[in-house]
Each structure stands twice: as C-alpha cells, then as structure tokens.
Image 1 (cartoon, rainbow, N blue to C red):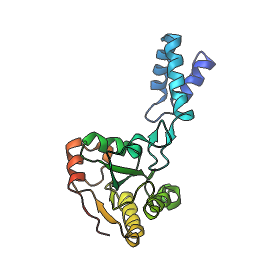
Image 2 (cartoon, helix red, strand yellow):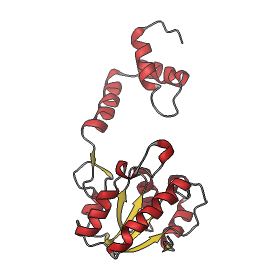
Image 3 (tube, rainbow, N blue to C red):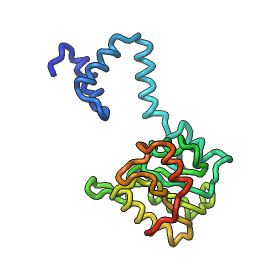
Length: 204
C-alpha cells in the first residue's frame, strides 16, 4: 500500500497489528483519527497507554483490575469458598453477565495446547494449586472448571482434576449446555447461566 505520508504509514502499520484489523481498515481508522479534534485523539492515545501502564492483574485471581486486588476478590458478598477456573478475562465477563454466579474466579490465561507451544508452566496453574493449599485469600471448598469444550479445554480440565483431587477439594464442571467446541464468551447468557447453576461433578 503506497501512502503519501511516512507518518500516516506508521500509524497504519501500528493499527494493523490489532486483531481483526487489516491494512485497509487500519487506513480508515487512521484517516478518521486525523480528522478528529486533537483533544479527543490525545484522550484516545492516553487511554490506550493506561491499559499498559496502570492496569493490574489481580494478585489472587489474575483478572484485570484498577487495583492490586480486583473488586470481585475484595467483595465480602461473594461465596469465597467457590472458585471458578476460566481460560481468560472475557470468560469472567461472560459469567458475570449471567448474574447466576456469586463465587470467586481464577483466570488461567489460556489452556494447555502443545501444538501452540502452551504448556502447564505457561498458565496460572501453580498459583491455583497454591491458592487451594494455602487457603489464600479464603479456604476453597469447590473448584468449578469452566473451560472451553474443546480438546485443549478438556486436556486442561483433566490435568487440573488430577492435581486437585489429592487436595481434598470438590471439583465440578459446567453442565453441557455449552455446545462442544464453543468458547464461553460466545455462549448466550441464558445457556451459560443454566450451565453454571446446574454444574455437575467433574469426571476425570
């Protein structure tokens, strides 16, 4: 793509690094920003920069937060003995939108996928086991495995089940209202809500 400006070209290249944004879309976004008021563009740039410089990962559950401990982990209105294990932050948002779950979370940051080079040590698995063993921030009675219904999600679930069983904690999983092969973030709220409300023991 031949552009008349090096500055414009650099902006397009950066915008095109975003997921789902091709060069043509990036050019449209760049031209739109160019026409916007300078203050609006500055606010936009500063908001994006704050994502990197000011956003935290909760030290308990690894959800995103403005503070060291996220509002969910800090709340005294949650069922602190139940921890729902999810693949990513989007899954926390999806489950919260159902308004059916009142426990805590643990974000793994992915699932075991050898083909993608993602192993046990690349995920927040050790911190989950440590959380159960040390009862920090609270004693854990039940761990819900709310992982994708894919081969990678099932592999991760089986591994976690084997690691958690000796710790004497109850391990459950979502009822299969979520279609096989689906991610939680794409499930509708009613289906997802019923799946967690009617969770079943995990069969390893």
